[in-house]
Image (cartoon, rainbow over all chains, first blue to last red):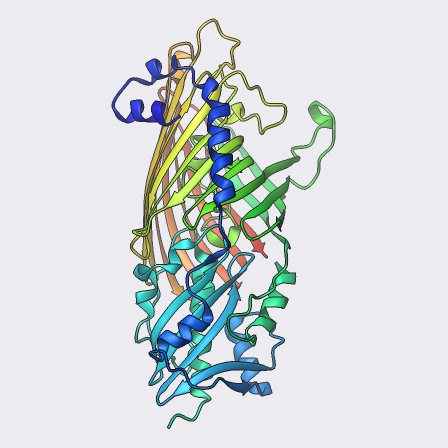
Length: 193
Length: 346
């Protein structure tokens, strides 16, 4: 297949390519790919939550704290998520004006685990820690996540800037944007020293 | 998906590091209901109306994770609401289709391999066509008539991506059965599809800048006659598109062309089409668009369509649509009128 496509890009007329019978290569391609597959590793864990928290506090993270969700806050979370939310509390780490959150939301069918650092009510870092979807992988790269840097929250609980999406990855983009808004909203509930 | 969403909602409160449990089996779906109200004018000047209600697509998706790197995904579609065996006036337009059913295995963080029935990596809509994701009640006609979307085949595909936003797909799959040059009708839909002649698809896509997508696909068909013609009828499809969205604005353009070798009907040796579309989201829930499509399947029979309208999303997964269209076919009918639609995904 590759050979045939290389010939095409090299300018060989398609009529000539059609005479190249490649069906014989089919079993070989199958076997090669099947041999590669067992090398597969676990889901795409780019960084563990522990490592993210440690990194965020230069290796000296504070003790984790818990934010209990009162009814009005829970309602605000649900408004952002656009679906119900069953949780009662959220764990976080706080030091000075900074807070760190590890949150998850469904993209298409699977959760995207995301680490978010808030500094003085603005997003300092947003990083995809675990990505389990087959599509929408672009959201894990800085060329996408850098758009969130220094984003804040409006009174309507929207980001104060537009996040440009990715074609074919609408649901993943949507999930990450929601998590950014939630982290900012939760941070507003904390009393920073 | 609903099941997993519930589980994951609870997971927001979970502790660090511990792996989060999520549903191994997921259910999703989408659908769209349309009303078409078109006035058609034949070359003779005779007018007729096309007023139709149609639950165009009802789709259920089932997926299952066997472990963290081997998964199954499927999509079953009921088109046009009702299927009945029969012929002529006794028949219905309905079809039950297995559009996707494949096992996918991750090879490493950035590449995977799938085998089974999958959507061909081509065009803007073929792989992503949930109604809330696109403008217009009906899908654009260039992708429908030229590519032809929705297009699925059976075979194997290797997909990968690089850290700079470049991704690629290489597929070896069942071929079309279209010695008469009718590409769309040549889809065997993997229903005891002839396997005498295969097809090869390669796509390169760049999405390394937020909002931007540039992609090109090449496909080679060994023999559109599937071995029934004295000499193989090869064919080549090239397709490329660019889409850019920034803030509320989005613009896209696409070109697709088939070249059929000798042996195909002379007047169908080249089939091509292009479209341009611009849209603007006035609010988060309301957007307007305009689209121009031009295509030709038969020599000297050019077709064009202009569509303008709006989408209204009362929920991010639910959309109501309205558009007004004019369509002009050389040497054939003209039509104009409006379409209404409601669509959803979950």
